[in-house]
Image (cartoon, helix red, strand yellow):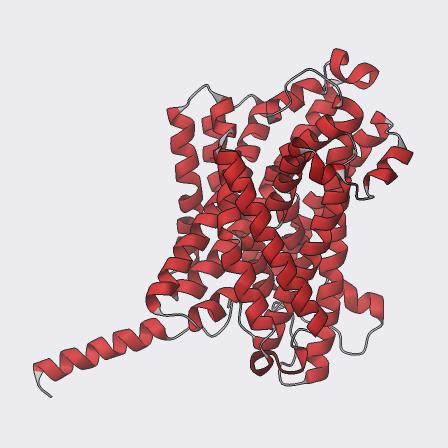
Length: 457
């Protein structure tokens, strides 16, 4: 063989190697959780429970907190209907993502990359990677501020500490995926009980709360309310959750060649997802109810985490229930939210990097690279604006705007793939699911474009 032929052969091998997709999504945990075959409903559901918690944390991450509490403080309970609608949309899209992964054995990133050119694949990877960074911004800032509020550690140091999450995740992966699920579920429970306790103390008007879930025309006629409603919807459905959901739905052991086994896995995975997303709905509702019950009509600025922390111990704002304990619980919930969200964000980053780039490198290096992509811009911004936390928290707005830009690149492929009869077989979208999902996609894209326009204006 000539030297030229040998070089061409080597290049051919390199090209083949680059274009060969990974065999499994999150290979180290794919199909590692066993499930019973002939058990009852509740025992079987317990075996499938877990992935839904990892998905749910993305719908109640620190990026949603300011928007929800601000919605309550400005418009009382009227935006609860928006939270309900957003949660129902999330349930539909996450069920589609889980079904896609279970049926095809591929995640959304892998399928998108398989059906695009190399150049388009790189472009989509960049957009999606930036979306992961935008998602992590809220979680990193939330965790850093919570550490500062609880322990008095400077914000820059607190942000740097969040980089250790990747080491924690590596340790947890060694212990098994069920351990990660249990820890995240525990953190979700902490968030739920903290805000449930604070709302009970706030004693909201329950008749007004129930009425808040009923749609009304003011949502459209009041420009300020519409803008905030768009912010809640735009911040709720995040693209990285769709990629993650299509991957971790494959962590259970099932027979992909057996239609009954696949159908059973879809059923219990979707039930788990809907139960956990219902918890996220309750948490987001509690955040808005808390904002309405304590801060409606207050003249104080409540646009930052530290403002909310201070307000909860200020009797002039929240009345007789003001207490340092309430502030501490708020900070603990914020830290729990940030930490649980960063664990899932790092996993989503791995799914996206492997799926789009077919990148083969040690897991520790891959996760560290994913984490650094997110943390370095925030750390640089924090150093540049040292002492100006308002500027640092201002990153939250820009992160939500970019997520709005990235959202169509996840939703549209998801609908196309799950509506493909050849790809999905008997599990293809039913006509009503297909058309409702397209309507949702068009409406979300329109609302997010409007949000971007209003924010930039």
